[in-house]
Image (cartoon, rainbow, N blue to C red; front, side, top):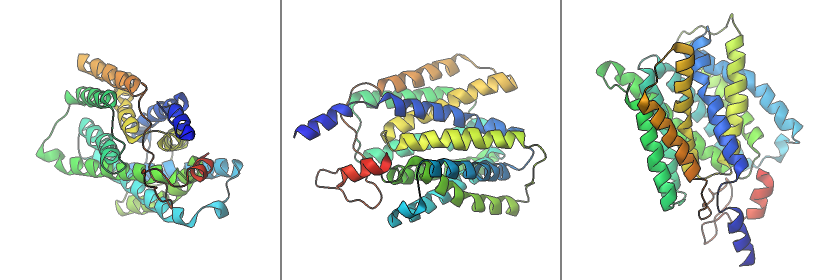
Length: 324
């Protein structure tokens, strides 16, 4: 009884470090589309280089942190491979979809994980929101709608691109779900390195099948894309996935349209109106609300572990040590 009470006190609200990592990770990821535009290769090829340039650095960081492949649980290899395929499909579908629809539509449908991942948490992981968290989710969705609502456009010409971007959002949510479970027993950096390695070959084959230009003449945007989006952005996101609830992750994803709007204003003179600023404020307030004190979130069951009768992972000490 005493241990359970102590554990609840330490998880009454998300700690500052995972929240900070989550927000910084989303900011880094929001720069990705800008650098994709700046590259001189095809959009799917840009995704391939984003991963292939980052993978050696991710593995070097994992090994420097005393990770060794022999320490991996057998039950973890398949989920990591599946996560890598989901991420490859997400990048490939979204990058092609951008060329077939408006940027507003691509952002809207590509971030459908904002809704899918929290719904998964509510229905499958039984991480039910408190009233304050429910209010935060509504505010975040309203802010996201305002951010993208002014330029949102549905038309027959955009239909194929809209479907591709929506499919990318579903795959991204699947990637989150798998990586959240894996992170309960595997450190974030090795998990990201292995899943990224799996993603590279499908993206290369996809780019070749589309007849895209593969070899760049200007490496600057690709190197920056790999460092900022994959090494920094995804590393921080995977770290946060293992420590925060699906609701908090979903709300934080909406910071990307806020940053993207600022980048568009700075780089392409895209005018920001009052709805954009109101939407950004609502998303910010939602992130503040989810930091308020609330009951401890239900943890996702780690790969290879069973839940006890309370719905918690059966081997908590092992999970904490492995994820640390």
